Length: 233
Image (cartoon, rainbow, N blue to C red; front, side, top):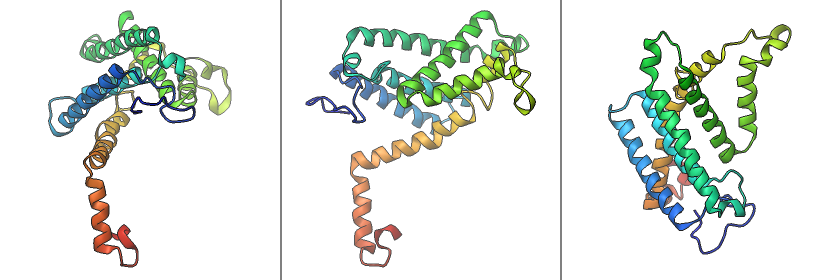
């Protein structure tokens, strides 16, 4: 993040992100906690795969809510009112996520039937994922998500021939979006929890500790004059 001495310039990666000192401190400590949590999840059996994916989403989502305002602009990034709103929004988003994941056993006990309250929680969780994706990556992926979800429960039945889809009920869509290998907290999330996050964490450790520079320097010493150079090492 920016060191705070000069505001990020338009076009930079950090432009429009929140730069308040206490926000940066909060992000630092939350990030450290998320890193430790991922080490526990990857090297112990304390958490089920469903809860691993859920805590992964909640942890990174908290960082996104703190750093990314609804619109990336200097005015909104510096607004205390919008920050308070985002904090309340985050409580709603992540409270709904933890609640609906914790309700899985009860839903199965009722014969895979969701109560109206659970449907609302599932919908809030999906909206949270879409909104956080929009804030961090832009509008393209969220638009594709909305088109895909509405195709399944709505306009897919209006099409003809190979594109026609009879559709699913809203309850089935909500259930399949939260639970199962193809859901929000399914196999793709597990890849992010394990391989992707741990790769990034290891890379950050190499950069911050200077170990990466040591490896490069050693490679130059060992194979710097050989055809192919340090790349061989």
